[in-house]
Length: 241
Length: 241
DNA sequence: CGTACCGTTGAGCAGGCTCAACCGCTGTGG
DNA sequence: CCACAGCGGTTGAGCCTGCTCAACGGTACG
Image (cartoon, each protein chain N blue to C red):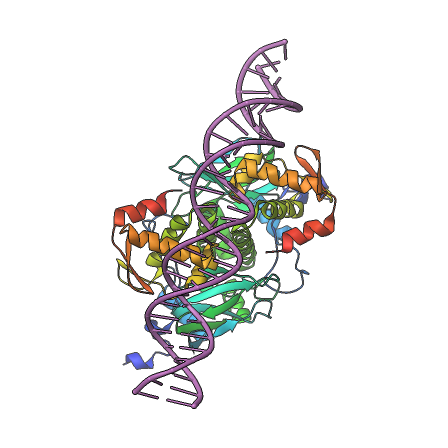
């Protein structure tokens, strides 16, 4: 009888993805996209990696050979510009996908913000698998579309909005994505990272968090952990555009 | 002998998509994604539509039954917020795809900016086709990924940047996507549309175009047609972040 | 225990927003 | 045919908010 140890890829150690689907039925919340069979198929061509925080996963404009799926931890995806400025394109969490190449090259640099567990999948093996499994590929299409919608919303929210509102919406995003149990929010990245993600100066981020603390909307338990104190006011800040 | 008229879907009247691919070979420019066979397969399940400018294609939060591909013309995709503000998520051009649903509903309202020719494809028929044709689905995955990258770049560029720079990058985007022969740029949308796309007030857009005209970077041939006068300065404005 | 680095706070400045007036084009009705 | 209203676009004046530069406190790590 096959005991759990006999499985080459037990289900608690196989890639998974999560997103809001095209069709109805998910109640508007992200749901797991992959069946256990699909996860095992991916696990069969994936390599498990553990990376320490601050490790670079790959650099922008280098040849792309792998796609990555996060098992646990947080990464940031950013780009350095000629002017020397660094812009954070996004933060990535468990069950997220990254490394989709453009013209054979990675478009951003990706770096571990916390200690990280990754699945690394060779692009050509994945492409082959997807081409022959329409069901599986549909899940990937769903995931990428989900990220696209998120990015569009973020673009709208980041655009023309006061610092307090931007920080509130950032915390709201963290709350949805982060593992910490509400109303606590884990915010492991630096203020500078948050700032260059939101298009603010780090001083503006500081002042915004100070303002939110002052009016008792949030409270800091430590420098990198926030608690929502006044949920009503918080949600209003996030929703108002 | 089959004359051109015998084809149910001649190739000059079938959906097409364009994007930068995952792999190398496209020289970094968008290329046609679909083979003639694939285009005919899509044409077989598509309905051709002609819409007058200002027509609403669909409204946000309504049930989604179709996917659309633009044959010619320009649309804007936007959302109205409780505060009454309208935010333009993006403009869409020929060989673009729109209407990907979230939880069975359209996420934005889409409206024709110019007279429009569309292919309208039933979602379930498309989903069925994609599931059974991994090659075709891969092209769609490629297109959605391409749009995702564009949106990420736009989010970065729109964030924290002076009005003149934002307008310059908007014109640059129009130049790439628009049909007009360089150095002319066709800008059919209103200043208000541009403003709510860039996260500026329409006054700020006016002042920015005025400034660009004053220093002879661009020139207006009429209210909705621009010509690049100083290409060097223009490109520098677009590239600098 | 010292040294960086991260985060916070303050002062002054610049650029965009708001409010408001004005111009030119379009379409409409007398 | 013309007068007028409406809309889109431009320009001006004053305010507000976030950026820059700078100093300072706390924490982490050697």
